Length: 549
Image 1 (tube, rainbow, N blue to C red):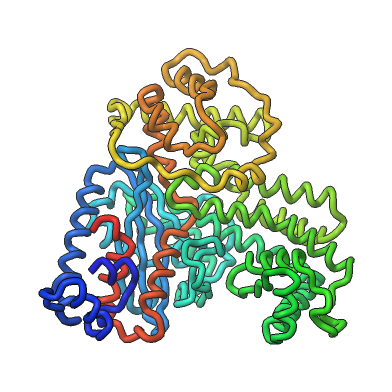
Image 2: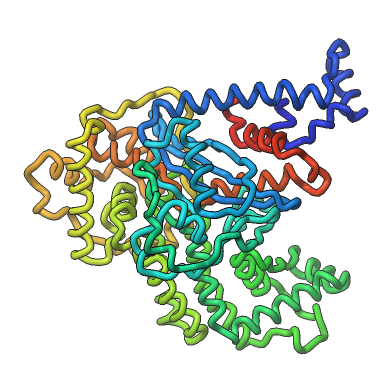
């Protein structure tokens, strides 16, 4: 069972002569089960065991968040995927796949809503869901309600069912061999529904957050679509790369001169273009082609270097915020500011791609500017001890953020949750470290010059004293996992740690469910397309929750 579930091996392996001979060699007395027996007995039993284990853990959870999306297989069967995330009593982020079930008919907001309610009720988390993370498709907005800023903005993004080739928004995902295509959904793109989007939304439904990576991808798309010069140059690079890949002589010369080859672009991943450009600039392409129309001039290389400098912050932010084993949401707002600051630096130092830069900055403000006024993102960033209030761009913003945190602390102090000290277990493995620190340092370099200290006004009440103590606490290294800090300091900061446990477990992106779809594509590969939906649902459920076996 382990090899079938963990390694995504077809159950008919038990009928293969080579596998049978191996088992016979290891244990001659063992009687091999049939494929039918494996599918109809052990697999369903394992599903029940894992499902009960997850339900038991969720029963003790006070708050959790979910990511949700729809995916289409090669046979165009639609599947609704839902993952659940929370911070455990040991201050580890726990993630489970709740379902990847077939959803028939039109993928409307109402049908998605009904399926969601059924799943959350089954796992007993209907009233525990804190945030729901989805992409910007109109059917998702209709199902879960818009964010506040979306009430005044016409939704201009297509509904998206992820096709068989889908994957994360970045190539740094765990499963990098599966591409991502977007197929249009079934919901009509009609902005009129936005004003009534809260109608029939259940009282206990978690607030919807837009996937940061998906929104960032739309920003990049806006920038690239607004520059004919860059589009033409990128097309030229694509032709050069295709020429090299289709010519054995050209490929041999490239590999001989550089010890590495070219990277082709992928139309479904914006950052594949960035990787293609970066690799071309690294290579010595002398003598690779005699076609003058494919040769790069020094002027074109300068434009491409500027292109790389502009989009590298977007790539870093996308990679960082797609993490699943550390707090990603606390980096969302600082990443937004970091991208803006880095892009403005290029704007001030380079005379190339100014039109792209202007469009990107406008799109960032339009699509992500609401985060500056969103108390959730502000508080989450402040509760990351590597940021605290350093991400604030001015004294006014610091004062407003302090008020947001204090208001949240008072609300928690008055609730039942705050009267109980967060429990801390000493057993279990350590919390995993965050992403490579070099990426964080580069993106968040705008905070290096921060010299501010705690405002003197933070005095008086228990809430204000605890917050001031936290801001003055220096017992934390820049590259340390925030959850490790809160695990050690939970008793010292009981009110803040309660809020941190609730907020820092929220994923900033819907990458967790995209990873599920990547594995789904590996299970339903071309030679397994006839796998029954029921059997597929069981296999992907066990694969993604293999830690509970």
